[in-house]
Image 1 (cartoon, rainbow over the protein chains, first blue to last red):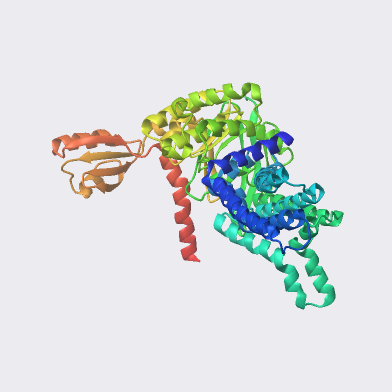
Image 2: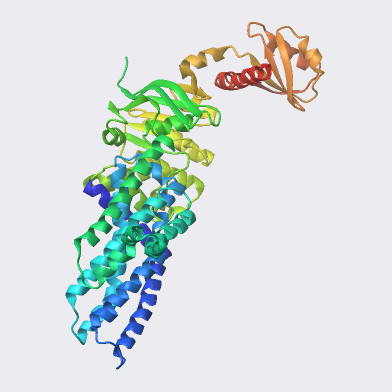
Length: 248
Length: 320
């Protein structure tokens, strides 16, 4: 089981890095976030800046922005997960091999999540460079990192599911973007609803649970929220691919 | 002497929505047997093959491969299957070696046997010189060979090939046929093709499927027995006479012209018509330059079983 998941994840990563897409995405994300990092840092260096700490302003601020950038970039990374296997016909190779669909889906998920971890590592080098000159609140950074990681894991599983629905990468990308964006801003959509509903909408927002983690509040319900979202969409993907053999 | 049954297909049916792809298909394949799968486009060949490999699920019926039910014990059954779909399942951005390495691991070959398996498979398919090339840069024939290589890499006891020789040049086709004959000695092979001569050269048994039903399941040598007495010939004449004068010869049942100088003559196999035609061609100076068997019996059977049905159905449709 583990071997097969590792095999598929490794192949996914290898093929990601064979295409220029992964490198370009890494470079662009790094560049954009570096700009924000610089802006946040120079804002903090202003004499008139508010009294809150360096970690709060610069590091958490950067991770906050990272979440938004990921939202834009993630659909491009997840769009080809299953769609391309279908287009190339390699899905038949995978399904006629002695591996289960669960292993296949988990392998894909693990592969793309490892890529996100790598991306996160590259981004985190920037705040880490601050440690040369000053002290950072490592607890808050850790909590923020977990937050971003969970957020990306949710992005990955939603993208994986949507890519299992179609055989066109473009459709997968735009739909994933739509769904992620909706889940991001759903708390705004709820502001006009009745008080009870507004709370429900706000609770469903991917953004809300992540902001509290960024401020260093480690609430287990927030963590659970992302884990449940990820598991839910992974299970949906497995069901979807399984049903395809019967109804496809 | 009956050898072990490696593939057993029982009363298989499969529907795409309302449309039925195959209905009540049953057959067995023994070890060491090469089964040729024939049928017009859309007859259900690919569907059947995909169900055997577990890529599609059947609505009814069961498939067992090497004694394991594909639905109940997919992991065990799939270990014994090598499958080449119609479109070879290749990752264009990998090299041949990387791809075969991945395919071998997917099929559950462990580290110790890996290099050996890849090399053997490459050698068998003539891929030794392209190992480090990207698949997307290979020609269609080479891609097809890589597809075959991944299907045999784990020496499965059951090999299923959907149109394996499409896109290959004649020399490659001959090499692949040799390979299949070699593999066919101790594996079971199912192959589908449009090329009738391929079945005749290669297969032990032929299975014709039309509109989702099996219409013929017969060992090839039985089919060939019927061809000792041909019932049609093709002749080429430089100065062909009027068709009516040919009809006058004893034993000729019907004549049709294929092109300007080639005719197809259907005749009663009991008569000496061929002698008569040749004599007449010489004496009347028709300029005979070609005399062939008309349809091979397989082709004739195929046309009768698949085309006849359509015409009959059309007639029924018209009547309704």
